[in-house]
Image 1 (cartoon, protein in one colour):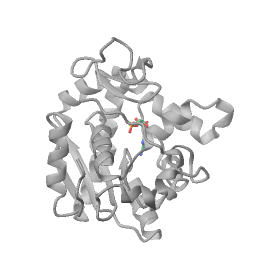
Image 2 (tube, rainbow, N blue to C red):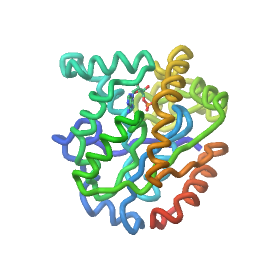
Image 3 (tube, rainbow, N blue to C red):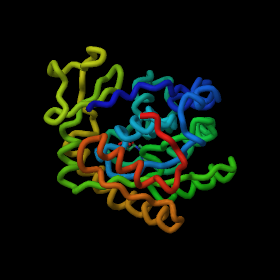
Image 4 (cartoon, rainbow, N blue to C red):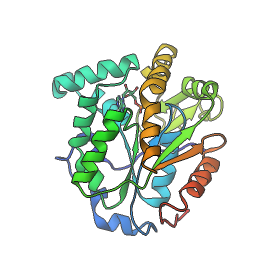
Length: 262
Ligand code: AMP
């Protein structure tokens, strides 16, 4: 199953100044969540956080908010429309390195409307360091909001590397494919919109190594941060997306009072 991640997320991608229809209360009523779910999704790159976020969004309504996607969207802007801080951030991203905490936290601060959203949120790719986790704690505290869970997906390293190196994404609609396990019907073209598929720059072998190392060094301690707060929910990411989704629901059962619609 290939997930199409094509939501209306203008505020997230462009900042608080851009209104987003998702924040309207009526959108939440469509879903059967008894209250919005607010969670962070943790795990190494390529573990399938984006796919799980799309499934959780489709059935529970909480918005998929990826910091990597903010940066990739910014990359498509004219250089003169990007701030110097954003240009530097993109250089880090291209090398597969983590963008400095201060820059990433500022991006989140510029998007606090998304944290307040009536539909809830699923943060994907943030926090990636303990400093970022502390900053998120503070931001949520200022808004009198709490996290329901920090869902940590795990997989053996060789499987993660294999998933990342075979990943292909549609430039237009962001649908995700895998050259072996989920190929498009026509090579190089998206099944959904016919757009060209590409390999993300940071999914090239040299960047993958750097990303895996920075995950082990900087992001693994974030798990302890949430474990200490009683929020960590660990889920195996092995198997098909639907199996992982069902496992996620079971693990969340006693934490988030939601009735998924699908
Ligand atoms: P992702 O799509 O989450 O794999 O992120 C792609 C790239 O964006 C990462 O390899 C980093 O260079 C950068 N990035 C995304 N989120 C963060 C974050 N929270 N902290 C630092 N760098 C980030």
